[in-house]
Length: 153
Image (cartoon, rainbow, N blue to C red; front, top):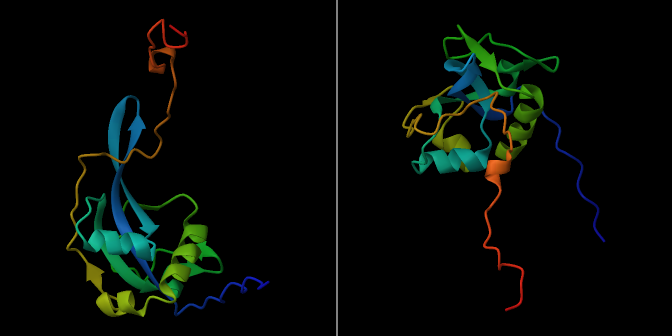
């Protein structure tokens, strides 16, 4: 029986990609646009390079130290205009998880070297990302069945 290896230690120089997403919030029945900065795991980055539609306008390759200081998110030293930009929910935890996905992916680090911007994205708001959407289930959501569905004929 082999034991799982301990998580790799992270340093300020570790590589990560963050995306600037164009999302929406629902306020008083209206959709309000919101800019969100969120980490992008390596598997999703690969999907984005293949042309998957996304709410990201641009991706930025950075070092972890450019995003976090003392386990707190920071907006300084970013290659993006940070006016009106918000951090995603659970930004610190998600960023640390995303960093780990790039530790063994030197191919991605070569594709988008640190400090570069990836803007060849299939940006689309056709399917809007609504951050505060609430899913309310009603009786109308029930599947209507034929009255003989559960009978043996």
